[in-house]
Length: 230
Image 1 (cartoon, one colour):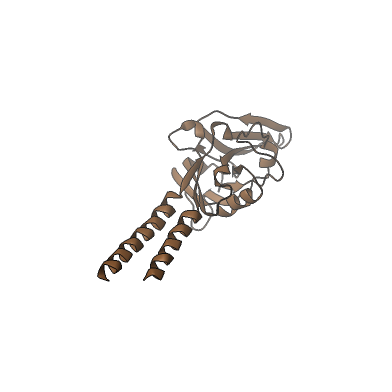
Image 2 (cartoon, one colour; image 1 turned 135 degrees about the vertical axis):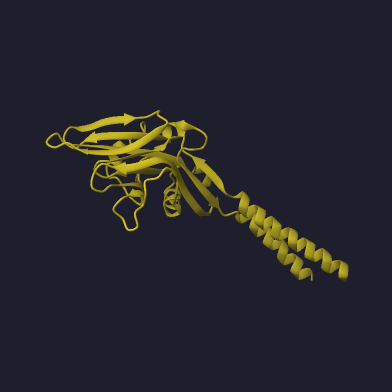
């Protein structure tokens, strides 16, 4: 009898360990591909200037140049989410490495927003996917710098993290292979983040946590069997 109790206890501990290992092993980091980031520029009077790709950083800038129109520069990046297809995703954090932000105006801000690409098929190549015109909407879900907020969000360098679970889930539900984001700034505000080309894992990325459903269910089933045997 005592031997059965000890054996059952040990098996229960092993099953719980299996659940724990499965949960921790489920975290995965998804990186922007080399072609998946670029800046896009346009003038409000004269139209688009075009894309700039291939650098180790990408930035934002807005210059009011009346009567010659205002110049805008935004950064666009796509992050692959196809490895998450068919899984229940319980966590998704966007991370970017900032080189710092500041403004030459009375106040300034910079934001990152999820871009709903609609029916467009995105491939991980910002230029080929022609995302520039859509990026002019400058979505702004997350603040990376704001000198006028209370409290102030400083433009200090370093890794910045944002919860993007809802956006990743929306893209997966729409059958998209990438989640797309746009970084933009306010008047006379500048700053930059590292791109995929910089290497060392410093480019934009999503740290996702898919639910380890199969392993957990198997482990829980095993735990139930042990309890029934008791």
